[in-house]
Length: 362
Image (cartoon, rainbow, N blue to C red):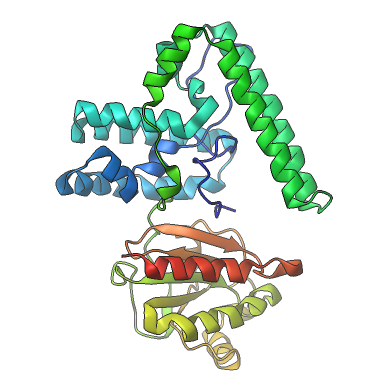
């Protein structure tokens, strides 16, 4: 699931930018695509002191990047790494033409801050620090051990054999140990260089927008069974909940009352709920049966019959049900796969909280 909150852009997460190959025995870890994530956010734009024209140019560049970035999330690891590496390079090249030298320097510092200890995976940073290949290898080994600890803790937490508080403490300890190892490996001169490479501390908690723009809806092989035809571009300025379902899917049906209540509770505040019925069975390919189910489930918001799964493919969706939240500027902010209240999980409450936050934004 891609609906994690921003915790300094997650130093210990594994979703992303492939490092350049080194003549090392230990492979560098996969790290977060922090440049792709942060460059779309207003707080980062303010930190960089972007002009309105610069911000517009940045968003123009992202239009050619976001679709590929979003779709590759479900691809095999090597393809994902290579694609994100290419997209990051494409973005970096474009930013070099848009930003001035001071802005580029600060952006580089923000990337290092966001990556934390993993900043040394970046060749540029490791070179500036003067780290030898041997030192980098030894640190990669430490990173691998940390990742193993974190994965084990997460498995225990998911199996409910470890409570959330204890899990958080173990992960924080692993992160602290990793940081200490990096600092201990540096000379005093390297520590001073590190300070210049990270610059003044930035409050990453202020970063709200870190996911791609939502894919546009398509009418290719699709038809609106309820409501007027609409595009996400038409809905800029509103918060949109897009949910994929199949009307005979029991897990989907358990989520439908939540979407109905969202429509009832928040439509007047600016929320638009859109259902996309992508068939899984032969019966679900019948527009008449789907339309009848809309009445049975008392669905009143717009519903698109995705008969040929064109929207499903465009969104690279993988599971019935899945619901996405899109902010007023058209960027994905959170999504949920499966039943929101499965086995006591308070998913619907969490998604409702996000909806209220998005509605409150300017």
